[in-house]
Every structure is written in C-alpha cells, then in structure tokens.
Image (tube, rainbow, N blue to C red; front, side):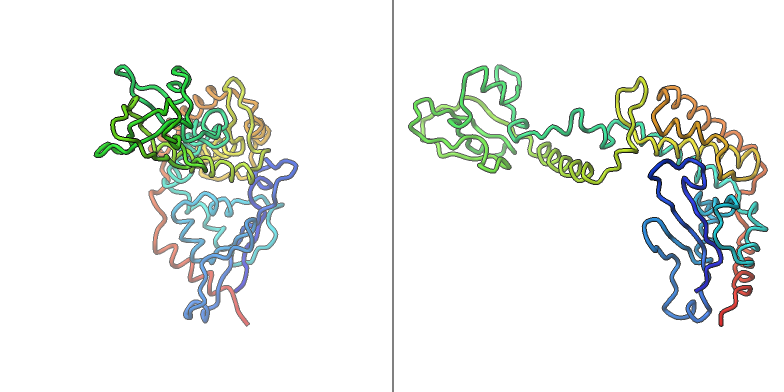
Length: 345
C-alpha cells in the first residue's frame, strides 16, 4: 500500500477552526496488484476518528457520486496538503470533470436535510424543556370520571385518596385498563398502583362484592417510550460537546451551531459549483460562518435565506451546462493510469 495523498481537512481547511478544534486528516492510497487480486483489498482504512484513507478505486467511485468530502480533496489549499504523489496530480488535472449536476443533491440536498434537523424541536439539546423531566409510571395513568378522562394524580388529590390504599384488577378485553378499588377501612390490604421498583402496574386481590371507584388506563407504550428517551438523553448528556450548542437569538432554544455552520457552508459551495464550476474549500466568509456557529444570528432570517438559496440552487443547476454524470470510461482509464504510475518494490 502507498499513500498518494494526505491533507488536513475540516475546520482547519475551511478557516473556521476554534480553540479546541480537532485536526482531521484524510487521504488516498493505492494497493498493489497482489493485494487487489488476493483477499487483502481494503477500500477504506480508519486510523482513528480523526484520520481516514480511501483506496483509489473507492475514492474515484465516491468522486463519481459527487461526495462532498471527496470532491473537497481535489481543491485543498496548499497549506493543508501534507503529502502528494505525482499519481494524484494526474487526478487533479481532471478534477473539474467530477463537478456534475449530481452536486445539487450531494451538497445542496445534504445541507437542506441538516438545516431541518438543526431546527427540529426534537433535537436532544432541547429535550430538557419538557421531555427530560424524569416521569413516574403514575404520570401515564388516567381515570374515567363523569364522561371525561383526567390524570390519576389529579383524581387522587381531588378525592383525597392515598395511592397505597388503591387496588387494581385486570379488565378482560380492555388492554391496559383496570378497575380501580379503594380500601376505605384499611382492612383489605390493597397493594397500591405501582410495583416497588416503579416500573409496572401492581394488581391486588379484591373481595367479591366490592364496588370499584372508576376505570384506570395505563399508557404503557407512552411510558416505555419515555423511559427509552430518558436513557438516550442521559447517555447523550454524558458525552456531548457542550461548546457545540448555542442559544439562538430570538429563538429561545439551543441548536447545534456547528451543524448550522456546515449547512450554510454546503449551500454556499453548491452555489459556487453551479456558478463558477469550482470548489472553494478555504471559505472567504469564514467569520460569518463562525458567527453562525456561536449563535449570533436570527434563526428566522437564517432559514429564510436558506430557502432562497435552495431556490437559487435548483434554478442554477437546471440552467447549468455541467454534465449530468462523470463518464464511466474516463474514470476507468484514469484509475488504470494512476495504478500504473505507482510502483511497488
């Protein structure tokens, strides 16, 4: 295996790095004929979460599909290039042939999806406002009274009832519904509503002839979903990078600032591909992008501009003379030429 290209990528290349930003590396390598013909072919090698390399065939496949990260490697700033073999120069000579109308969806489409995700109210950093107050099983119990349903807790308080003196009995053919009894005289020893660990409904033995107070419904699916969300949230909370989450001006919630930065960057790059037929990796508007990351924006204005950019993208690519796709024969010949240039001892 021989590395033919290695570069510093990500925020260092874009000019949007901040204190504490990681230094990421990506590159391209060529495997020998022996490795290709045997069982040792590897299309990708991940050295660490910050360093990854692609075998030249896989690299060209990704270029052909207009993969944004791979296309950026063809337009890297000189100060980010660590290693470059003449075989990679051969690819660079033809880099513009990989700019096609597919970039509308690979750059623009990805940006649109990320903007929607960044704005989404269900992103974990916003769960704290409502979902992530740990609720008990009783918060998912409701009773029927006077033609209406109301929370069990409200019912108990309004009727001055003690949960521990309640008894529940299964109702046949009523899924997750129970007859609710109350031990007024404290003689029957009802077991209450919740099991000791609080994770399930507790049933009681009720003497014949006792009259139930009402019907109780336990929203079991809702409780299970809440427990699952809470576990996911607490796990995320332990591992999150708090510097990424910023308060957006006039919006009243936290949003992933880095996510929004990359959304804008991808939209800008897509417009440049359509208009200028090039990729500008080192962003001329880096300071504006950093303001987005810090949350120093009005989200509504940001979204309005994004929607305008999306409309421009569709029009520009529609009217562009960029090819629809990369020619298959060209890519095949380029791959063979690159392999022939790389010599193995």
